[in-house]
Length: 126
Image 1 (spheres, rainbow, N blue to C red):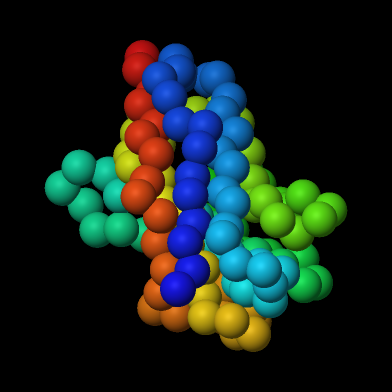
Image 2 (image 1 turned 90 degrees about the vertical axis):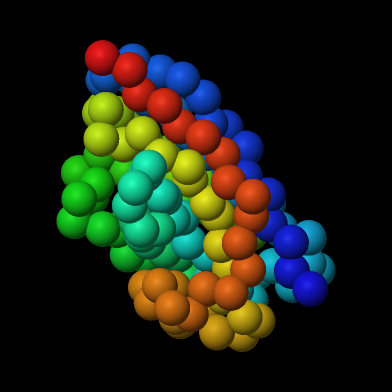
C-alpha cells in the first residue's frame, strides 16, 4: 500500500506564492508517476500537474501552466508544486497522488492515479 502526504497549504492573498510538497512511504518511490489534483467547492477533482519520477517528463494543465510548476527533489523522494501569482479561483483542496508502481509513464492520465493523500487546503483571498 502506497501512502502519500501533502504539506504546504495555507491562506495567501492574490498574487502571492505557495509551494506544496508531497512525500511517499514506499522504498521505490522513484518508480511512480506523481501528480497534483485539486478540488474546488462544488467542482470535480481535476489533475493539474503530473510528473514521471524516473525521467522528469511532466504535464501541466492549460489553466495553470503559466503559473504552476511541478518538480522533484534530486533524491526522488519528494515532489513539489510551485504555485505563483495565485488567484481566488485557485482556492481548493490540493491532493498529491501516485500511479501504480512502474507505471510512471501514466503521469498525464488522471484515471491512472490510484493512491491519494488526504489533501491540503489552499485559500486565496482578495
